[in-house]
Amino acid sequence: MAAVLAGGLDAKASGSRLLAWALLGSLLLHLFLLLLLPLIEGERARRAAPLPLTARLAKPPPEPPSVAPPQPPPASRTPPPLPAPVGKPAPAVAPAPAPQPVLSMDAAKPAAEPAFVVPAPPPAPPSTPAPQAKAELAPAPAAPPAAASGPDPGNMARYRLELMELASRYKRYPRIAQDNNWEGRVELRIAIGEDGSISALTVKRSSGRSVLDEEAQAMIRTAKGKVTLPPALRGKAFALEIPVEFFLKEEK
Image (tube, rainbow, N blue to C red):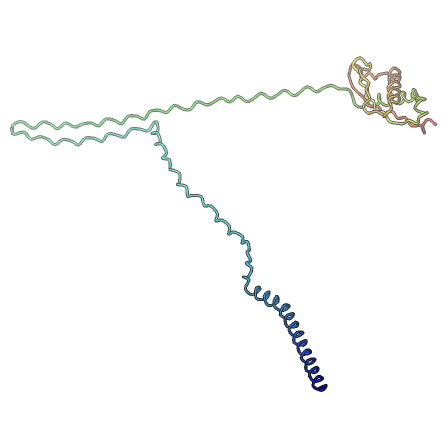
């Protein structure tokens, strides 16, 4: 009895192991199918999907050049008839043929002498008047311009040099300019009238300091009254340009 029970228990244990193995194989099979089916479906869908369409924009062909319609040729203009030349002699009149003599039936009377037509002389061609000579008046030569009498440049240069030398003696360096180390160059333009006096004294180029410009004008006015005007420049108006320099190193 014990043997039978032992055999029954072994058979039951063996059946349980087979069932467990069967269940495990079924689980593995289902798991394999679950993992493999998505891959199969994706491959099948990829094969069934239509191929992508690729569109490329092609450059349109160039338009043919527009051809202008042919224009009709311009209508030819008929030149007007030329007038008949004046003074051409008229054609001569051809002489008429001489008539044949008429024979009379009366033998006793001679036939009348034939009459001859004398051709008229051709008319003389009209005389063309000779063209009148046109008198051409030559323009009278223009009178040479009168030479402008001006001051002699040589006398002006000598007078300018004397004025500058004398002005340098009356040169005074302003104290305020020395204290502030102001330096510069002043260019003056002095205009002399016909009476020999100063008609205008202006600063052509400033030194940048009004005190230096005023001192330069003052020394030129003082020197002008001390310089004698040359006889060649009297009664004539002229202008001179005189530079005046202010540098501290010249004062020391």
